[in-house]
Image (cartoon, rainbow, N blue to C red; front, side, top):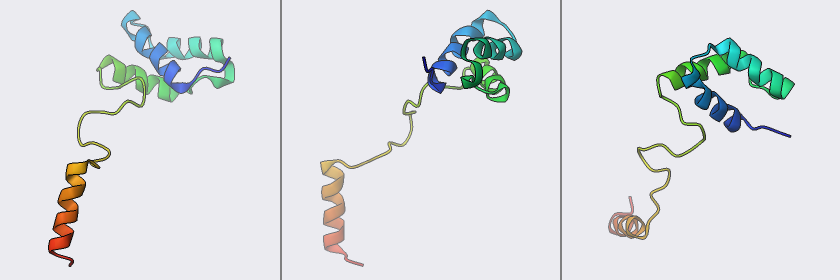
Length: 87
């Protein structure tokens, strides 16, 4: 059974309230997944970040500027501006 990085991050996030140290989380991942476990340093970094509540568990889109602004209105405005001034 393959466990993804996102699933390992979720395990760490759920486990952080238990109050264990980074070494314990890493050893649990290694015991369960062997060589497929995240290395110690990323686990330690994630534990620290989850304790400060700064990290999402997946690659969800964050708030802020959208990845794409391609809407019909935006396209129409851009076409109008380029028709008015071709420079």
